Image 1 (tube, rainbow, N blue to C red):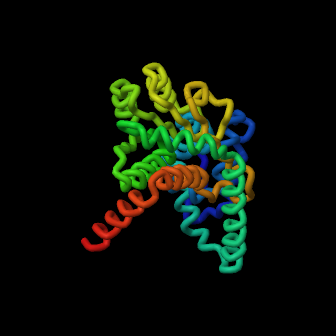
Image 2 (cartoon, rainbow, N blue to C red):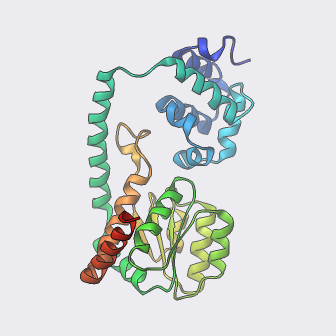
Image 3 (cartoon, rainbow, N blue to C red):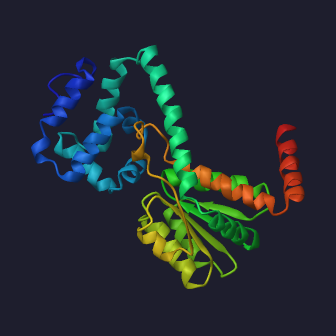
Amino acid sequence: MFLEVKPAMMSLEEFYANLNLQANRLTKKDRMVMDYIKADPERFVTANGRDIAEDLQVSEATISRFCQKVGFGGFNELRFVLSQVLQQQGERSVGETADLSVQLVRDYYTIIQQAQALLNIKDIERCAQHIVDARNIYVAGMGSSGFTALEMSSKFSRLGLNVQAVTDNYFIRIKAVNMTKDDVFIGVTLSGETEEILFGLESAKAIGAPTIVITNFAQSSATEFADIVLLTPQRKSVPTQMLISAQLAQLYVIDMLYTDVVSKDTAANTEKIERITRLITER
């Protein structure tokens, strides 16, 4: 049995020590999950299994098997126990929080700088033109990348463009098989290996529709089906990697695309944005 004492009586160090007792039974991927928990236990207890799996680029089944190997019934039970341990652990001191906030600002800046260095302005311009010319723009993403897809849909819709965020595996497939060559498919995937996104990209490419992928990995499967690849940096390049949202670099890319689309007809697009803003604020 993993717990010989109740969670409320266990320190975080004791919790980790119990995990370490199972180390000889763990595979390389299991150890990745354990390191993830130790690096950011708060995220582990608040994020869903799909987001954690995407962060680690493993399957949800891998996470579930790890939880069972270290003595829990599954992911939800481990997460519940860890949340109880964290609750009694108490808040960090003000000084620690202040130091962390300074480091976060530095790391945010580093991530944005890296994202800027990876971007090819000509690719941004080509993507923007495809978006302007398209009949429909489908932006697909799963897990945390789905939030990026939703943000892009909301942002570009203000310009009167027909942008649809698709974040459900079933609807990604439905939209993909009903696309025409006059549409655009944009896949957002950190790993570049998300099955539903690969299906959408491959289906769109097969009918001659422009395909765009936003990913961390230039050599991933998704790039094989993409006409344009927009690369984003991996968070592991900064000390606070587990605290920074995976969406940070993705949103920078979206804002760059949005800026270029707006610039193609600045006066008309600015008027549209201002009109939408007035309608929202006057409600």
